[in-house]
Length: 118
Image 1 (cartoon, one colour):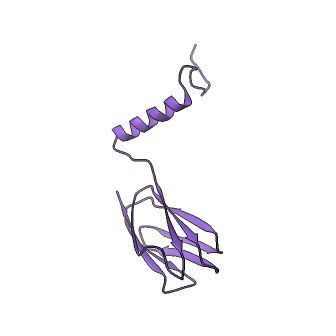
Image 2 (cartoon, helix red, strand yellow; image 1 turned 90 degrees about the horizontal axis):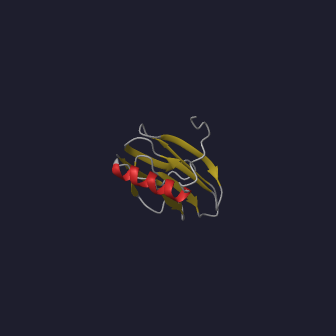
Image 3 (tube, helix red, strand yellow; image 1 turned 90 degrees about the vertical axis):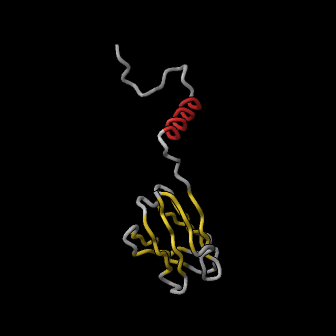
């Protein structure tokens, strides 16, 4: 009789399943997604240019004593994180390759570029 539940057989451990998933991902040339952090301090991004891969995310961490509003109107990724205060952080996941120009709606001199590669 076929099994209808999704519980793995007892002889397969959770660690074993994780290892199998990692091996299969590397065998197919796909990497696990990564998260990079870009801080905002002194009305500036911590980097001017950042390279990430498709599927990666960038966390924008506000280290200034006032709010920031990170956004992009770029074709490759259009987003607006809204205003968030000191200590706040918001993330964006990049789902296609391209160049993304990132700015702060509150501080127009703040700008950076994210290059998303396949």
